[in-house]
Image (cartoon, rainbow, N blue to C red; front, top):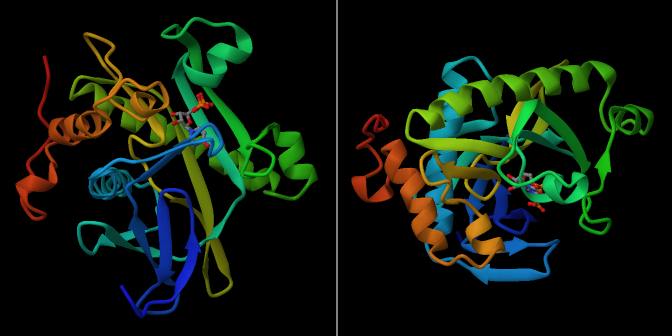
Length: 254
Ligand code: UDP
């Protein structure tokens, strides 16, 4: 790791220059932050689990035709990705009320929403990621009308696929955050799913008990954060202890 050039350091990941142009190496740290950086901790093993979980989910999404920036996992904490131009919008998809939605609109946590809801937030730590509308996004040129349509339909496809995948292992996909990037190939540009999909940016509750197994364990001081992430990996059949090539299928729950 020593001589590689660091391109960017975020709260939970570092990006390094990749082995060839147009690629980057995404390194998963154990750091966790919440409430716009006001809360910070190191959760031992989180980076390894998120690297593995995100690899698994990105590969599954690729298999159903959703383009992603993921190329391959390199080791316990790193994956090779395609370099993209990140669209500065966080896309949140919600199925069940939780977190900021409940607070903002006074809806009780756990309420099933009448339909899946897509929200957009501007990626800006200084401003605390304010919610924005399609009007803001297109007027300020963060994405075009065509891009935002594609982002919305891809996000709903991701939601349908992941909701089913998680339900199959006894987990409710309550909500999650996605990021998209522009991938340039000569003169052509296409939108691909970027960043990571992990318990850091998904809310996942046990179907029977509603136990929180995601980053809310950290946000709400519920304890056993790593154990929650481990349980998600175990149910998906991808605990790192099983060995990188030893990928069992998901464990179907009744
Ligand atoms: N989320 C995220 N990054 C953010 C904000 C939210 O990954 O900067 C995820 C979060 O983990 C949850 C979903 O987006 O799965 C919706 O989060 P919400 O708006 O309820 O905000 P929070 O309660 O996390 O402040």
